[in-house]
Image (cartoon, rainbow, N blue to C red; front, side):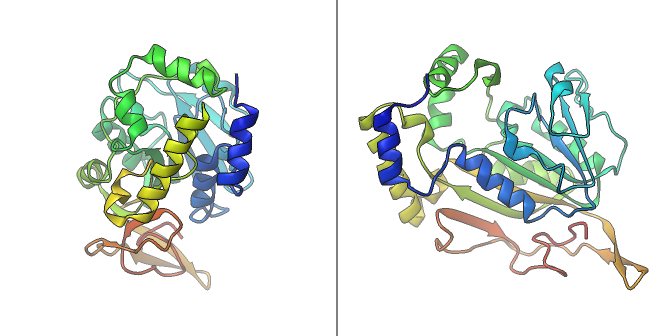
Length: 293
């Protein structure tokens, strides 16, 4: 169905700088800050390529995709696509293949997050990065979704103009910064960065009244620091512990990934973004100690 003219008018008045799929656009920028042109990259749960913001072919040396749905074989945004066997959960690539793995709106569907994190760690090179975006379980959208059937999710998405093919069951077993950190520590990752984002209230743009409620909620969680944990989107960077080779004047130098000290909070001067991460940048500007150069 799509949004009404009234909704578009409110968009222009309340969120003039926002575009549709603002969270995917923001995650794309987040990934590009960390991606290098020679990286081998894997898009986990890439699906049929419904999100053009996840087209990184011009920014990586090789881009692969895996998904349990055969539609991934038709994904136009990757160099290669393979099916993921849900029975084993094994990613169909050898150990230490990729420099970067991304997962855009995937964690909320996982039945066994620790198994998936372990597989991502296995296929990443030492020092490689796992970049993800997922809904925050504490936000009102996942809270409602956990207590409603999939048919309701599909109905709401139809009202929002979203294709029913892109509505899947959600479990939310790894959808807080704490659970992400827990699974990371068990599978050979360190937490480099966790950001919480709140923006235009996409799911409440159905009427003027619900839109206004969402607008007030957005202003509240972006203004009151104590409520920042209730923002809608989690974006994170995990680094695989180990060693990475750094080329310096033609010579190979082993760069040992140092351990990360206690995380810290960096105020609310980040435009609705709460960041937890190391207290310094590393080397040539990597956002994660040990990130592949």
